[in-house]
Length: 275
Image (cartoon, rainbow, N blue to C red; front, side, top):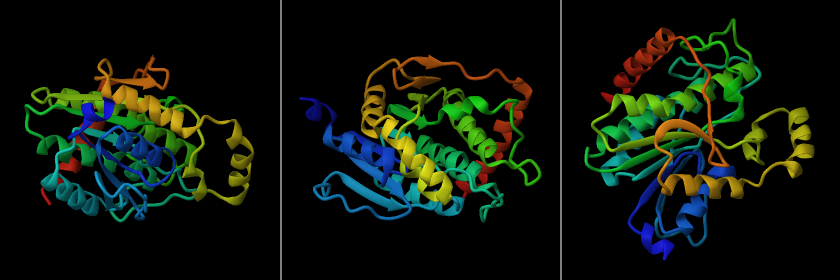
């Protein structure tokens, strides 16, 4: 019954080749969705030959990201988008080829560009639901961050928490920007769960993670909770929810600073939307 209800529906999941993203791919595929997955490396999923497409995308390259997402939208318009891909900040300040701090671009800016392309490719009368997977550390980004992280102020945890704050705020921004669309946006705080994102860190950090991992939440349970929020009404107001489906407050910031930030984001995304 449930699979039949979702047949013909499509979902785009970023970072769907490992960790939570892979569990999301499996859950949505099992429920009858056509699944479009992005990642850095191809993933062989036996039994997923039907209703599954993989696209290699490098979020540290915005031109590449725009080109691939435009290619996807020429073939299919997703009904659902889950912005899941992410990295932990590197110990040293690192710039992408586009000139942005790496965490800021990969975790947030690339997802904003992806959503702009998909929203504009979706006819106004077609429903579109977008969810961003953030992190509990978004609450640590206080006061409101600068437009982009610079070398002098760089701290790995600071850069990571700020990128997740911007991701948490993205839903309300997009919903307000496109009132003519049948657009539903929200963010998800998944809490702490076992994840392969830590594989990019140093040996000491990985060792600590190995000790703590058995006590963390199973990513499959997180994926199941996200699926329920994606397919059921009541999660479309631009707010952020935890996996118990309870709303969480966003920190209050100066509206002039927030307005300036989104204006700069709009200027940037427009450059890549024209490519």
